[in-house]
View 1 (cartoon, rainbow, N blue to C red):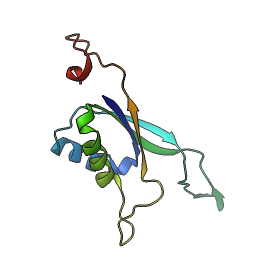
View 2: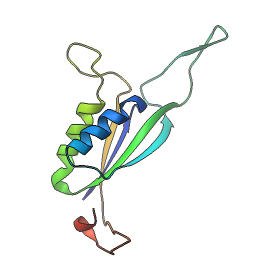
View 3: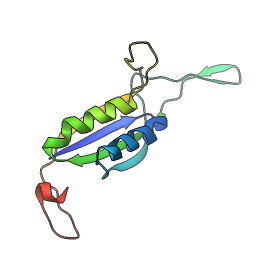
View 4: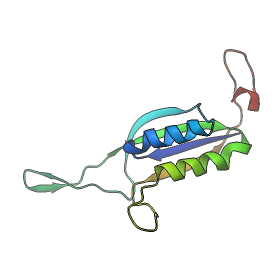
Length: 118
């Protein structure tokens, strides 16, 4: 069992969610978050360049069984990557994906544990 955490652009949420649903991956958690990495936006305020500290992003958390890890990651990459150049390599700020091992998963309603609870 793995927990896939993806930080993506807010504008890509619908595309990623629809792609996941098309692949029968429908149990996701979505949060609005702020942060910064390599991406920096510059705004002009009263004629001065201002670099905001935090940029709004969307965080997806998806618990999957081991068989679905690669499929889920590939879907997120394909749907969240911006194609700003002819190679479709994406741009700075497209996001990150983290994969964490899940020690246990328990469904509260039925007390199911492990892969069956996901």
